[in-house]
Length: 319
Ligand code: UDP
Ligand code: MG
Image 1 (cartoon, rainbow, N blue to C red):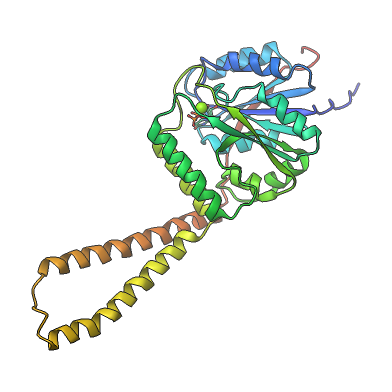
Image 2 (cartoon, protein in one colour; image 1 turned 90 degrees about the horizontal axis):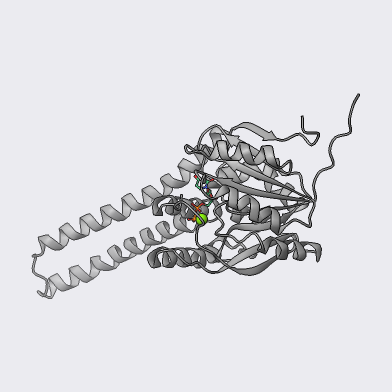
């Protein structure tokens, strides 16, 4: 006897989780309450957790047929885990959200309402971010501002992470983009369609600590800039040109001063500074070029963004 393939849900919710053993149960409960009126599936992507997240997830999956658990073969990082979840989603609209309850699940209702009113992408923009160090917040704000400008992405919503809704057609476009190094929020802005934003207040983490130390955050920022802008390359050319012009201008000036007897040959120290400074600029430029080359090299290897070890879900018939 063959049974018809199960009908895809209307809404998919995708949440990457890395070592979230203490908060995951609460997250799933609150998420389920928030979208109780909807036909939905909840996909938790376990990004190679090393704590009890897999066990907790197995219990959640066994108790709720609407939850699917995907496990990656190791820790691939937030953006890769999110991408894995987006490729698994079957819904007509897909909501991505953090699993640590910093993004309140109840906001999902507003995202869905905007989608029903015709939006393809609804970004949830953070209004406040309690519980995060000041310096971190400042760095994040400066980055968002700068990124919005230099990437030229007109839909880039600024102070938004990866809490958003994407319609099926926009998601298909995002998933089809072939690049491996995925700065998901940039890609979503890039595909266009009708994009809107809603504001929300970010909560503190329900349990555990941030899995994004400043170093990872800096890496994410660098990935974003390099994937979406060649401005750093242009800046290094411009600095080079400016230095050359300064040198050419200096030649007649120095000769003139010398002839006028106004220039004594002193200042070995200043020569040291110049040599070090220019050497530093050259190496920095080389480093910038190297960053772009490294990305091109990475892309040319065409390794997958993630490897899914398993996907588990309770069968609807209880088998
Ligand atoms: N996360 C992940 N893989 C990682 C790091 C983080 O899947 O390598 C998940 C994490 O479990 C959380 C979300 O990504 O659900 C956001 O991470 P986190 O809360 O640590 O970042 P923050 O909110 O502090 O920027
Ligand atoms: Mg968080």
